[in-house]
Image 1 (spheres, rainbow, N blue to C red):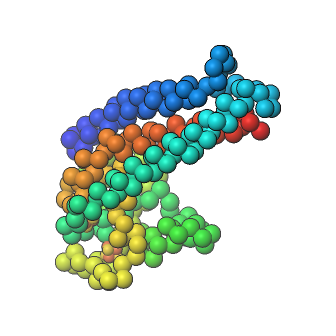
Image 2 (cartoon, rainbow, N blue to C red):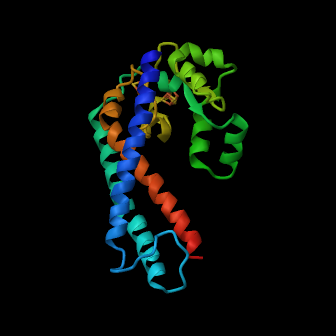
Length: 226
Ligand code: SF4
Ligand code: SF4
């Protein structure tokens, strides 16, 4: 457990550093497209069609076209690289799926057309108690508790047989085929994708930081340009 917590602490520290470096890199690119001799700041309010506003519009374009495309191209490369690794059939992901949403919240989302929620509910049913989930992956449950992550619901798949095989393998839904689709998800040591995740984690953290920065500037600039 201490090992797992140390790892999370390291990731947080690493993420802070990566975030800072990513923000500097993006800010440099924004500065490069700043009109010559213009002294204003990016997040000031400017008159319509002024030099400042044109810079803000060009920045939105830079963020949402160039930088976003680079992010998604890199994310696709990471996911393609995952194919070099294989599931070893430990069944932890079938036995313990976590969601920030309760069964009724997932149902509401599914009724509103959320595809992930629909697929999730077609596979997983909730554990009656957290203690049942703890038996499957105790380190993960402890980690959530120590980090005060209380709003987590635990699920499992009833199609898993006693010998940890999928009883409907040919028809398993896309979310099962795609797992793990988030390069930053916590994977058990037993998972065949654990080495993939460890290897790509620094770049995944950088992409995550870049997405946060792009979203922040896009939101702020959109408000200023209204
Ligand atoms: S449908 Fe099969 S692969 Fe998907 S969670 Fe259930 S047992 Fe696992
Ligand atoms: S946790 Fe990883 S190795 Fe285990 S069944 Fe799921 S995908 Fe396969």
